[in-house]
Image (cartoon, rainbow, N blue to C red; front, side):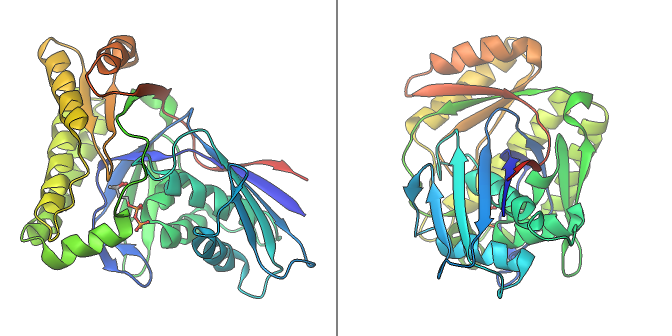
Length: 320
Ligand code: DP6
């Protein structure tokens, strides 16, 4: 029996950085993200009683390094005594370069695993199970503008607006195709232990979430951009002031931020955000997306650009 699910990455506008429980992988702060459309991960899971161990292939290559996390994610849905699985994952964008490939992968993983038995778990349950594998994956269960709120021993994830209700676009400027040196999970723990700004980061997050929620309800791109850039730069300040420092930016990352500021000064409705990697994501009105993409593509150090509208949450795509 095989099930295939597709999920898109999401990009946080109000960031998740820090865990309050690393065993359960519960985030220390709430977050708000947008789910993308044209980038995706498709994961097929086939249970096979003849297999002695799970087998994972990513883009047709064996991927033993990622296998323990994926196996644990499937266990969290189906139980550890399940039959072993053949897992095939395909994505159309670079892995581990700050483009949230783990978010789309684990969101697809829980949806495919869920379809392998008759339990029919709720979206809320699946979001919590995906979040246990990777905090940001919980948000890719939903489409459009998504808020993840902390509950006592779980997260509550919901869509604030569907993709079609405020159809912004995202242009990603790729400045490096290399895998990042320190993964987000490990880096967050370094920040929690060592950055003198970490406590202040936690203390201000609820106010940033309120501001962003209001901007989204009002479809106010300037207000959303102002709080999203501020929140992003605060997260990077926490990273920079960690010991050892966590600096994901390159010269091209900064050049892209300047390109976005220059466009905005000239009247274009656009803002940037940057995750734990060197890529810059510019969020804009659809009418501006062509000009934003051209300006970022012409920025020194940009290797290529991707452009996508907002999309829907993780879903099953076929049943064999
Ligand atoms: C900077 O979800 O990858 O992209 O829970 O340890 O898997 P783990 O972390 P992950 O962290 C994402 C961090 C971020 C900000 C965000 O997406 O909110």
